[in-house]
Length: 150
Image (cartoon, rainbow, N blue to C red; front, side, top):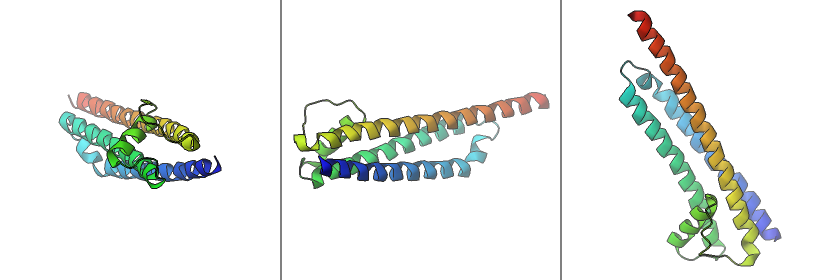
């Protein structure tokens, strides 16, 4: 049990670092492309921008899932990469299909992945809501500017 707790604590740090790095890069992307999004007639640009951000957030989660899959392979519990990624994705998203089990020695690690995944998905949701809220506020400013020009 102690070994599972230590690995879970390490994965909390690793997953948080991956997530923070990914969201920081996405914020940089946001700042870099802000002028394209707030340009007149920006509807398609805004659409593509939001799609790019969502794909970016999705990829951050994929990296986190693969990190856990690598851990399951490193401890010798799962030998197939595809199976490890499937199990990790199922656990990370708290879906928990239940068709693959690890030795009872690692149950706590698996439970912690579910908790970490839940937190990271929540963090991503807050990030996306904040970003879309700022874009909606920008849209209101642009709408008011266009209305004042008429």
